[in-house]
Image 1: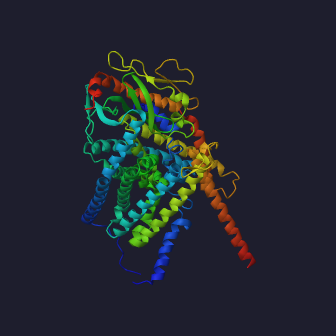
Image 2: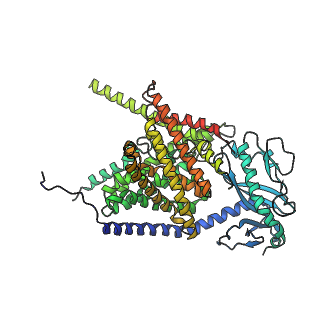
Image 3: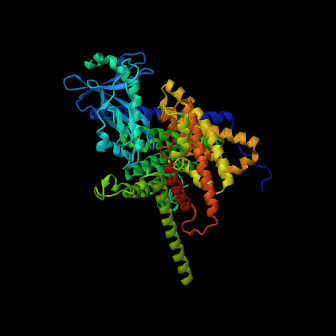
Length: 228
Length: 216
Length: 192
């Protein structure tokens, strides 16, 4: 039996700080290396995903230009890789093979049954209507919520009227989802019977995004018409 | 200190197999439940999550083991967590670079690998006390065991809840999927069922053992 | 998104309950829900940590985005959470040593509770503003406590029932959780 008590060894503060600093440096290096190493691949993946989604909702489009609708009014092209200015709304202008404007597309999101439903919708400026939409991400119940992708009656809601009001402050008529079978106006979305929550999410996503974006885009049609 | 090569590899094999059966993280230790139930709605998701977790496990345990003599006792848990978070960030970016669709499917649970009790548990219980080779072998075994557990859940839920396996439709278009299986309650039920199954197996083994010793 | 704080609160509490619908916080849910007396304080402690974590995550996110250091998000969140738990431990030890002892090992384990990190990650992903984040974390914590208390109550009663020994233990808890989860699915669409 030892006559001397064995004291627990506490690490001196200096040694602790030195070691922790070393570990922080190693970890920081690893993270930055991973971030830089994958940056290009990730950006490319995102670009391809956006392109595929926009081509899906604007079938006539052959090329895309990214724009931002500024809060003060006016639209500005976003250069590749640049970030949009604060308060600006991002949208995509799709041009056909001849360089003519085929339509614009923008993202919208709303809470669905399980989590956020993110959609991309296309707006046809000639007819002032939402021509189509596609789902970017959703976690709705398979077989129920995901019927929004295939249900014929739901898809027949589009083209959906979305005229901007005369004072250019909002939509003339808010897009709203109504109970299955009770659609009377061209700006109403007829819900899928048994999948009301997800249907309402789509309607709300489109409405919220359109109310904010379209009044800013409408006065700038001429700037968008020609592919710059 | 030298060990004969045969003994070394036997010990390594033991380390590896520990996580697969005896101490399987999913069925025995019942750790890392959150991703286990959330992500296993399909075989592909289960496999991807398992591989991602295994990667983080092996790398974290490796680094912890390498630095084990340097890490101050008082802040060891925080240090382990920082190391684990580093590798989870790496995995996060790698998955984004490989497939955005997979990244969306796994969602927040990739980043939640950080708080997976298995990794912290292994780092504290094993990697901090063993040399890198042993630590990483054990971590690999745990990771593989975890992946097997995830796959057991994912495949059952996918077959019953979507009528497919790894995306390949099994029963044709007329199959009425048991949708609840791919929803949260289904996750609980299927895991409960697996645990019940293993408990019954264990009971049978014990009974046979008891009979054998009685008859001997 | 423009959801009201009240909707977010009710949603996180019931329809998208953190434990029963989003699978966050399962380890303590299965581990601590044996007795009602430990389940409730655990829930409250976790809720408090979630509120603190949510607050810090909101501030951290603003800082990181301003300096374009998003890749440090995960690591900074987890460090903040570990520190918050440490803080809660110290406060409890000083002002309520009995509770500190009762919770025992489960208090530091709040650090690895997916629900706490989950709150921070989800509120960032959904781009909630300050009020929405607070409602979200409070609702999430309350939902976690609710699920824990429900589970503990049922499990206490089950101890007096005749359950086949094969099913006892975690398998039974999981089946219970499944039934609870099924029941909570009935809250879908509440408030929305």
